[in-house]
Amino acid sequence: MTHSKRRDIGLLGGSFDPVHDAHVALALAAAEQFGLDEVRLMPCARQALKTAMPASPEDRCAMLRLAIAPYPKLTLDCRELYRSGAVYTYDTVRELRRELPGADFWFIMGMDSALSFSRWYRAAELVGLCRFIVFDRPACPPPEKPFSPELLRHRLRGPLLDVSSSRIRRALADRAPIRYPIAPLPQRYLRNAKLYL
Image (cartoon, rainbow, N blue to C red; front, side, top):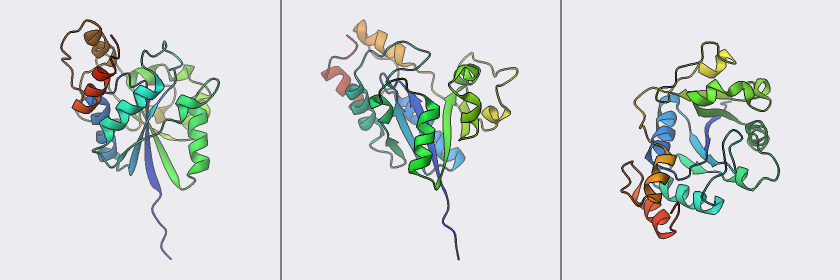
């Protein structure tokens, strides 16, 4: 009797305000390097350690859908946008494990998140629910003493684009050219919707 392979599913959360090419490149690189069957891009209602987002949940989902459409392994999961009350990664991963008991989950995060991981809700329990893929951020060194060795066990290799959503928003607000890579369809959407002006 043969056993079917467990599915490996990556989870990439963020504001995606707006989504840009570095988000997509990051998800694709994680899928390739770690043999993930799927990477879910999961826009959040509000990041617990950051301020509110300028674009609406509907606009962010629409731009994400356009950005990932060419890539079969990338999917959109908007569950966190519509959950009432505080939204925590711990709750989302537990919910996904109940929905997909035959899957292994890999949470993809930047080194800046690894540095602040001790402040995450139920951080110690979260470490036991999924594996982590950590990618470097410009000028962000690894923590001298990580919250858990598991956080840095899987590091994403390769050059990542130095792009930030905040710089794109500033360029749009100043009516300046967008000098950072963002796919044509999401860019057309945000211009037509007059976002960030």
